[in-house]
Image (cartoon, rainbow over all chains, first blue to last red):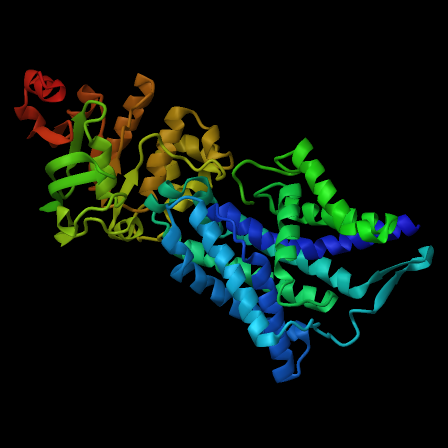
Length: 291
Length: 232
């Protein structure tokens, strides 16, 4: 029973990783660029939520109503003002610019919020749990909500990409950017929109992270690493693969930690390496697709 | 009335000059043929008109306005639509989704999904399939249908018959006649000179990036066209 519990906890942790990974996956799918500041932007969102909670005295979940649109707007501006200037110059410039952005965000956070670790307090729900019948199993409400949020966001994103005109434009641009432009798709605006969606989702991920655990100005790169691993395990360009990737990574980490307390992160990395060796395209890879 | 006027157009890929002082015109409602051997610059002319290459604004006038080098989406809004060489169907999209991408800008006009399906019934039958599952000829229909969904005033069709069976090509030319009959101005590139000349009111032959012959098909002899085409 203890193992079932461990796997269940891992699955729920996977929900959080999937939240981080979805935005990264979307950006790569549409624009073929890797946003190295992704993790730091999530931490920025968590700090913004800290500010909102302190100023308004509201619940961190409510703070998301403010923080998610703010981050989405920031994403749009970032894309339109900076990243779009790098289009057509190969894969290196976006990597350098987002790497630089990562350093800038970390140092700005250090300067503004000091090196103290912070935590978002949603008022009790983070420790409440739900007992599963007579089995003796219990799952935390908060991890359950996290996984639910991840699934809802993925369903929403799947709907946008699969059914709406803008989603068709995302897929067309992902397939063949030049022809998509000739069909009248303004790729700069479209990229701005993709980045806005990506950062809106990463804001949710950052706030959920801040509720789950403590964070500091330098927590971003780890988040980026886990997000990468989830994306690659699931298969680049597959949204549901991202959820499975997050779950596999989460389960690997909790199972590893159960074997020995120090092995959690390591086991996650090992499973990631194993997938990279045995199935480098990922578990659910669909070639050049984002939906 | 002149709808499209290309004036002294020179175009470059990096430092390589692909077009030298090309001028051509298309009147409202006309069908214009652009012929020439491989590498003569036909595709570059079309891509430039559609906004894929940076050129001075004055090099391309559309409906009296200089539009050279404007971004492609702005030109689509004005009604300039390219059916690219090699079809370039979006592989992740179904047949119907490919058509809907053509209507992305929402330019008003007569062409709707229903009318495109009427023109190409085979596309209606296969609307749910991935666009790239279609045969070459069907993909060309899809590419033309996708272009029509943008409700073009000027439809640019690149290499319409390349790699297609003669019967399929005849079908496509029937469709071109229908489109032209509706008053849409078309600029068609084809190496299949005998197919395209009867349809065209104006023909331009390109050779090595420059216009080597222009005129009305009736006024041109086969020998003159051959000379302009091959440069002999």
